[in-house]
Length: 223
Image (cartoon, rainbow, N blue to C red; front, side, top):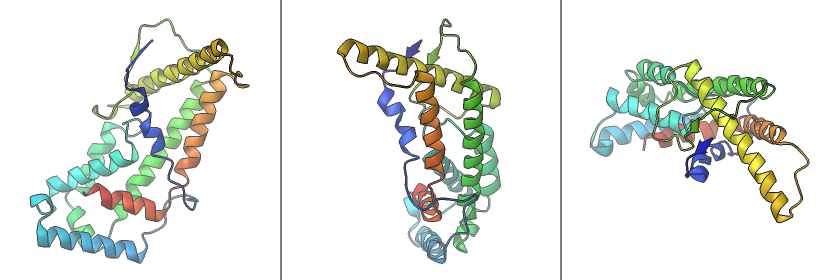
């Protein structure tokens, strides 16, 4: 199974989930007053100085939505292309007015959708890891997906993740073989267990996001 040479850059998306703060019990709480004030100041900046030479038009708002989604899903692994279009169609026409009155609820609604996608995918991964993999197929996996779009649909997403898991397992097997050749102590767990634990940690990191971090990601995406 062939892999891109940009492995470490491609795996950067995993590190995006490593923001540690107070846990989220469920859906993110409403934005605090200071965050609403920040949103108003951002809108005033747009009006007074025409950020990047443009006011917050619908086109700019759609770009903002995409940038925020990419800050959550850097490697285009969890959202679907339909999610992008749906959020852009929903918030593009109204984002300027929402921000002007200090309403940054789209940040939390999109994050909630992202959380649902991640949890659903992790459930799928747990099930998939209990089934056999065919490593005889001539397949490729593009590690760095930052320049490609989100999967078109659930079928495409499943295929992407099937290849991703094969890559993860093969990588762990290679590490085991390398350790054996160099005399390093072998891992006590098998490659499947290592991969499974890695994605369990991903869920814990997701739950560590708090309201302030979400709002900061959202407002930073405007830049």
